[in-house]
Amino acid sequence: MPCSCLAQLFSVIDFKEIKKNETPKEYRAILIVGSGVTENRFLFDEIVEPLSKKISKKAITTEILFMPTSENDENNNTEILNQQLLKKEYDAVFFIMPNRTSITTIHEYSLQVSPPVVSRINSHSRGNSTLNFRIFDIKNLRDEVWMATMNINVELASRNAYRRISNIIIESLVNNHLCKR
Image (cartoon, rainbow, N blue to C red; front, side):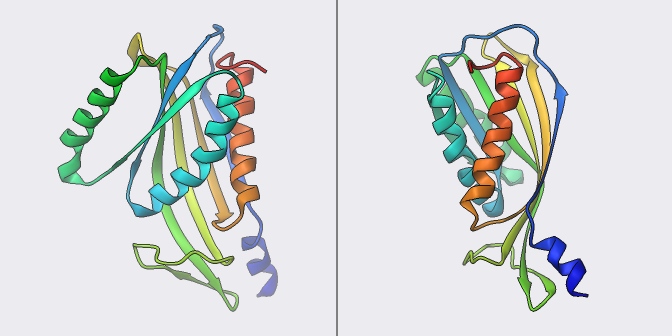
């Protein structure tokens, strides 16, 4: 039994590019957009903080927008996004959207599903999520320039895991000519 639980203690990050970009882009401003429930917000914030810093080092300014999701929010979120796009000139929109997310807690070699709202994150709390990444040129919001997916299972309190995730994303952006080395 302890061996199967030890596997749960390590971070798992599985990244796959779905659509690659061959045309070099020279973005100066990117709006990073996320949406979801409380658990998604926590993961989004933890991933976007180091990612935004790394993108800024590439001479690209970033702004971040998170929109909560529920059945009633869809039209409201579209309006919020449209208003944000009108406020400033962005070259691209970078969507980070959850496919599914769950928070689990490891306690004495057993997994227990936490309540829907995470009230406390400790060193044993884990995030298991599938995230979808899409970048659209502001000139053509119908077709993705780049698209990828990432399955993660990480300790939520581990800053190192979020740095690794942002490094993987940045490496892909550089390799796909979406930002400079």
